Length: 181
Image (cartoon, rainbow, N blue to C red; front, side, top):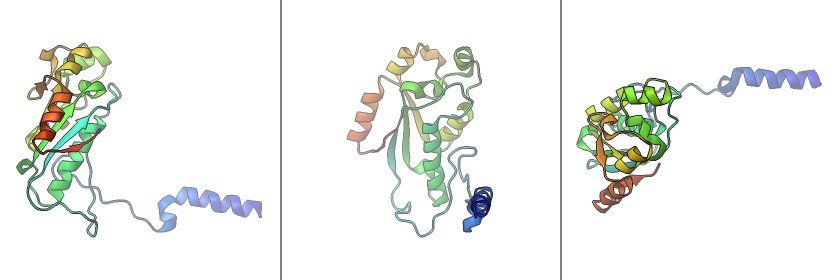
């Protein structure tokens, strides 16, 4: 009896989702490639519709030097991909990514990133794609200084704000929806 239970358990582990009849998701990258994959969910609500969105993303977390893109920037990419999958032009929306804290390193030049972390900055291509899709990328000037980076080390065309707090407060006062980090 014990052998049958162990065999059943092992089979379930080996087969995983196939044992319960699930398929792998149909991940898509309609606007941003390599980050922020999305899958159609036809009967889910709400779907993107109506007027363009005004959204500010508060991005604080990162894991610099591990070779992976910033999870916060990947979330912004997912939002852009969701808009594109819904046949909305992401550039028609007003999307702003505000980085501070550990996420500050994501917007630092490759040379400064390599000098600090000993690895290439994996966020450069993602930032370019986000900017091309109409996302405004902003970094906290206080966080840049606090992290010991020079302002000259901030990637072009990333904007430097006096602080993330003031940037986030101003955007919300202008009616932007806040996506917390």
